[in-house]
Image (cartoon, rainbow, N blue to C red; front, side, top):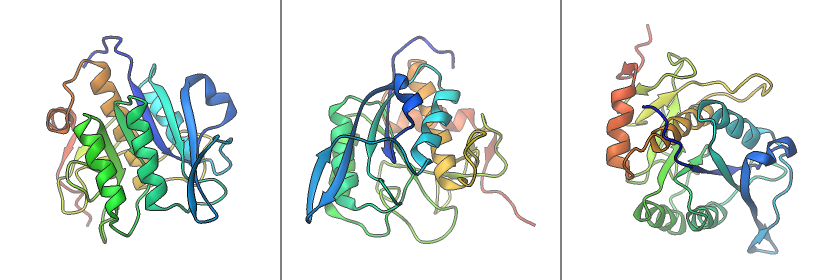
Length: 228
C-alpha cells in the first residue's frame, strides 16, 4: 500500500530511546513505582538498549512515523501491570495510532485489561509480544490485542500469518545492526507494529478487523513454521 503522507504516531512502551533518536520523538514520559506508589516522571535516556532497538526498527520500516515513548523499564527489565496500564492510558491521550508492547507479563490484572479495552475503544491498534509456544502472557492474550511473535522464515519486510493458539502474526526476529543480543518475539512484535504503521500511513481504515485483513493479504507465509 502506498503511503499517502498521513502522519502516524507510534506509542512504544519500553525502555525509552537514545538521545540521538529524540528528533523522531514527539513526547515521552516515565512511569515508575516509588515508595509503593505509581508516579509519572521525566523519561531518561535508554540504558538497556531495548526501546532504542524498537524505535530503530519502526523508523527504518515505516519512515516518517513519529514516536511517543512511555518508559516502564529503567535500570532493569522489570515492570508492573500498573505501570504498563498507566503507560497505555497516557499514550491514548497522546493520540497514537499504534501501541507497541514488546513485553509480556505472566499475570492477568484488571487494570491492564481495562487499559487495553479503553485503547481499543479509542481505535488504537495494540501489538503485544507473545511467545511462539508456551503459556499466554499479557496484554497479548487479551481480546482485540494483536499477538505478535518472531518467525525465522521472515525477512525484514515479510509477514507470516500464523493464527495459532499462541500468536496471530510473526515478523523478522532480529533488530537492526548495532543492537546485539536482542531477538525473538519482542523484535518480531516491533516489525509487525511497523507494518501496521505503514497500513495507517497508507490510509488504512482504523480498527483491528480491517488491519488484520490487510496483514493477512500482505503475508508471505500462512500457517506455523514446519520444523523437521
